[in-house]
Amino acid sequence: MRVYKARILSFEDPSSPKEYRYMAVDDDGRIAALSNERPPVGGELVDYSGHLILPGFIDTHIHLPQLHERAMISDSLLEWLEKYIFPAEEKFADPEFAREVSREFFSGLLRNGTTTAVVFSSSHREATEIAFEEAMKSGIRAVIGQVLMDMNGPEGLLTTPERAVEDIKAVALRWHGFDGRLFYAVTPRFAVSCTMELMRAAAEVAKEMGLYIQTHLSEQIGEIEEVMRLFPEAESYTNVYLKAGLLGESTIVAHAIHLSDRERKILAETGTRVAHCPSSNFFLHSGVMDLKAQESAGLTVSLGSDVGAGPFLSMLEVLRDAYYANVMNPFKAFHLLTMGGARALGMEDWIGSLEVGKEADFVVIDPEPLAGPEDELEVLLSRLMILGDERNVSATYVRGRKLCEG
Ligand code: GUN
Ligand code: ZN
Image (tube, rainbow, N blue to C red; front, side):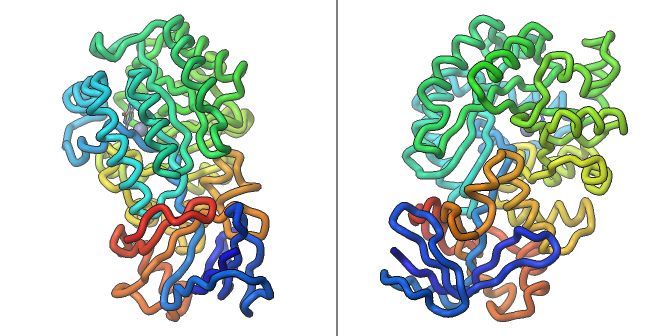
């Protein structure tokens, strides 16, 4: 048992955080007690006085092979993909390179306080296996999938529906559910680079094996026009995925900015989750997601960095852009980052907040020099939301294990 002392905050309720002084974590990495007095359990005291402890950050949309492609400016998403991203992802055919970047990627996430990440790998099976191995070694929680494309991309990134299913089965059998920490997401890139046959095959294998699904939806107007040209019989972009069988409670769609009410209704009825990626949306000038409209439609919204279209690994920096996109108080922003992420993954019973019985995924934050640790909570969290970054992360813990120190 260990007992942590700090200003401990948890965001189950988007309008008022819970606050404690002590958190006891048992040897299995579960939260055993939370209180304002030292709990009557033995164990070592870990004194983080002057610091905050927050639930681990959950990044529900990020691309591993794009780590080094950040800040490549372009006029449009489709041009950016062709000019920079596809060539960069082709380099992941080299396993040594894939391993090097994977290591750097997961250690970078942990250094930034991200304890759970939902990750697009490249189109390569071996690079995807390597991503799982490096995620395992790092101790992070992750949902990872090999990107699927079978049209409109360079030959080196294209697969066939048969090969895609074979690759998914092989990697998911080994890794989906590993240590209760690693999971597989079937990952058709987006409708522009996938035939209906590929998307149907992907949806089927995901259902059969109980896997997550992740893709992109409705990010830019030019992209939507291209989808409507490629699938002229479909009534909308969302409808393409509905017909393919890709939507559901285990599916996360990134962006989902330019939606009609009817599309929102389809997403809500199928229980599909939306990863809001405000930094990426600003960077590529994709548009601004209407958070109110998404929530009024009953959608579960979480946050994603979308590195490399998003320039920041730090989810604190993504929070700033979420605030610029849609005015919200910091309690709500931290709620989206933590509980929102856990709900997107259906993991809200084990992670996403600091509650007794949950797994102890947490970030130790030094609020200096942005704010004093005892400042009024709304001020303190506003400063972190607007000004915070990697420099404020003092340590990151997953399941009670310290994985990095800032
Ligand atoms: N749409 C299809 N692929 C991608 C990608 O890699 N990044 C972003 N932002 N959008 C996409
Ligand atoms: Zn993306």
